[in-house]
Length: 279
Image 1: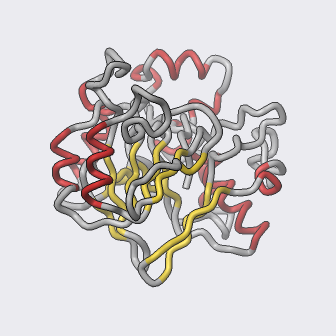
Image 2: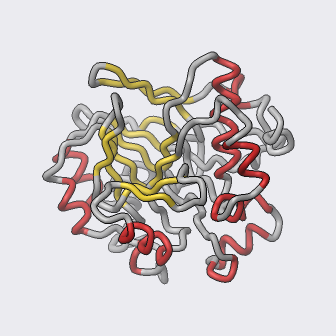
């Protein structure tokens, strides 16, 4: 489970393979909470992504998977421990036109590939994707658009769609991927009332969100049976370039139930932006 990647798609796959080699525990799939940074065309990037990319080329990582590249070949084809795929919801820093185009082209499938390798897969807004022998995972795209501190000037698809939330109130699922937080989870006056209501009604086993700064943590509020977690961005911007604390965790699932734990600092620190291609 990864927080915001902002283009660091290949480092996320590589971290999972590194973690498998370090622990001996295979990873069945990667899940991600939005702001994948899916901009396969530089001319369509938003201003914030372009600004960050000037000082950090990892922000441009979607370009490495949109077409076949030697960098992606090395990660996907040359490492036997590479997980089969990454499934994500959409945040507010994405090329929504491209995501919608791929989603519509996929027909009735619950997910859709956005890369040349069919390894990076979006879950449709308001849909539930069932993993073989794993959890049923639902997705809500975007951020809150109606609160007092709502982001302004996003594309319409950058905001949470009430119809997507309504669909999920009639579904059964185990894990909810959302980009924004349920209302009040991270800060007073921030987050989405719709997401809070969805969790209360659907009662998934887990709900995960990103979007906010600060160490990732469990949200210590009463959500019934649902455990709610914030994952901070997996951006490799710490002093030594290793993953941020609370940016990646492990969801284990068996016999219809699961557990979640953040990856320990001792496993984060050997992996850095400087050595991720080789560890």
